[in-house]
Length: 273
Image 1 (cartoon, rainbow, N blue to C red):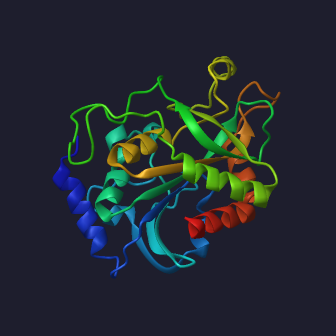
Image 2: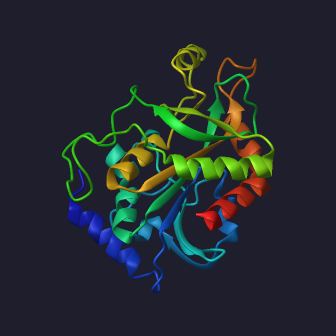
């Protein structure tokens, strides 16, 4: 369990490296989606290992660095690599950056991820804007002592993802990709891909995509009063949807194929908000 002073220590360290920049937007770059970092200008790069109290990314495709810079005229902070429960971290560690973001003055968090498609109308390469989530198979990121400096003990989660921002993102995806999906993201702890039986159950419960991140981060950011908007790149169809075994290589390969359009979507969205 972290104390409030530990979040303050991390935020103060980052502020000392920001050269006066005051970004209001942060983005978390998911598996294989770190390509947007190439288009950040006036970069200040901070390795996670150098930030007091920060975890370190251990997953291939997650660079493990915080990038402060510009997308167009907007100052942003980008997490090039995130933290997952399956890496051995507890949820207080995986969501540590979101509370630090609050202390840095972040008002909007853009969350991206690579996800498996549950909805049979989806296909690999689609983008799905998340409008709700399922996570009752996993503990809450708010479990434990509440830090009232960030938010109340029992937060409402009926609109974890900001509708106005989500609608704007859908418009841009529709324009750039031709097809936009909107649906429910199911959070599972990993690191195994889900079983066909689990996917059938999740589909019955209303899930459209499944992944191993995003929900804890969104819950903590929402608790802090940060506006969330989240998009999944459907990099593969979930277990049992197609007659093929799942592989992390599929995730990386699909992400690589859509990286150009992904960059266009994210850049235009950032400049529009």
